Length: 319
Image 1 (cartoon, helix red, strand yellow):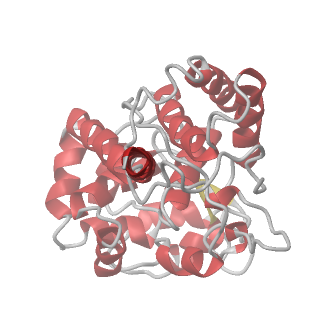
Image 2: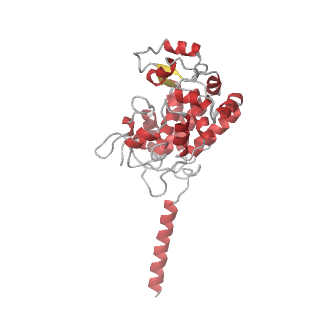
Image 3: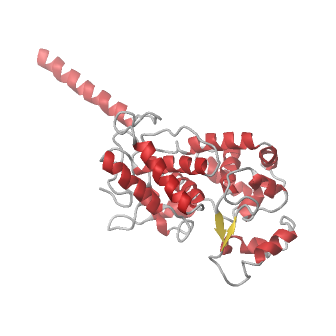
């Protein structure tokens, strides 16, 4: 009888441990004991990268965003093609567009030197996005940690669940809603386009459309470096006014019909998000507060925790 009770207690204990691991929650203090210097090490790498290439700030925020919208925030976007992996890097929204992979690889390498096998690539992505925002004058936020890395990628989902540069307002709202993000979250996160650049092919149709939703002078200016039939990869700043500083000029531009991408301008086009754009154009503090809150919320999309996934040794390959 005693041995039966002992066996039962052991089983219950193991089940309890399994449940705790499976239902583990993200925490800003996750690495306090296992790798207390991880965030400092990541911050140093991110600051160095952006100091060399100011555009990298926008790229790192976008990299985190594109990761979270496919399978959740699990670093699946970082995986290269292999015998078992079809990389998300090959998806239309990512190919020859998403950047920052090497920066994340470098951050991972530096963290591995001090804490081997402790810090996930998914968490490094989340921290890098926050540090990138801060470096260019944007808001900071407390990053919740404890994500683990996926052992799979999903090219199909990357092609269908990431927002496109020509999407309608209804489509965008629907895409964000499926991820648990509200229309306000969507507008706030779109405000990341206050920094960064876009390739000519993503806005050519808009600037040559002669539509009523684009400022004629703005269109003429953009045509100078984006010919009608050439220069697909030529870059233009998403915010022509302050392209390397995180502020609320993006929203001011939309009100003036100077949104570069069609998916930008639809946020202020007579629809349900007009009032949010107007609010953010007048109140930078409110925009930055909502952006930080939306980034935290986005970082909570379907993370792998506990015993799920793995801590990759290399961000671009499974162990």
